[in-house]
Image 1 (cartoon, rainbow, N blue to C red):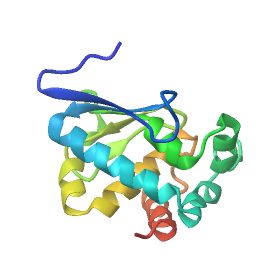
Image 2 (image 1 turned 135 degrees about the horizontal axis):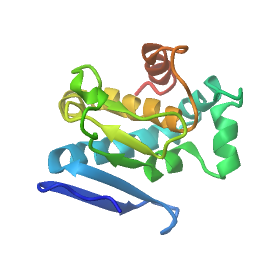
Image 3 (image 1 turned 120 degrees about the vertical axis):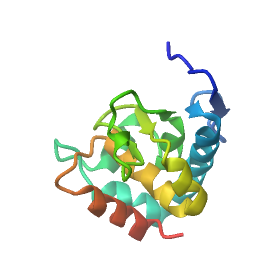
Image 4 (image 1 turned 180 degrees about the vertical axis):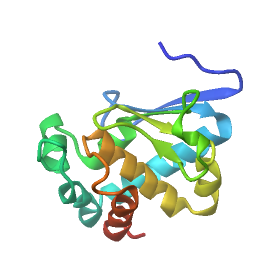
Length: 163
């Protein structure tokens, strides 16, 4: 059971077209939750476009399977999957202590940790916030890092999913 900290808001929203099977779970400060929810919805809209969804075929997990194949095994599409992930505030002593880190996860995890500095970026540059969440979604499907670098991943998301 996850605990909400005082002054936080947990949002559970039905995913359009999927009934009650999946929900968007965002937990963290109210303002951050609002911006994460908005960015996730934007990322989902982008992933509905075939060109953007191709980013899943651009990368592979550590076993060499394309991330699209991983997603196909789950019986989901990218726009559904990004909305079904959990989004939470960071644990203590997280990478969020570095100002340039906006969100993080680990390969294969079902939770994306969103740093408080994500809010500023989401407010100023919504397309970048959406790209960051797609980037983190790729990691949850098994994408490692170094190689490719975090910047290479985000650049490829931005190329495929240009707004």
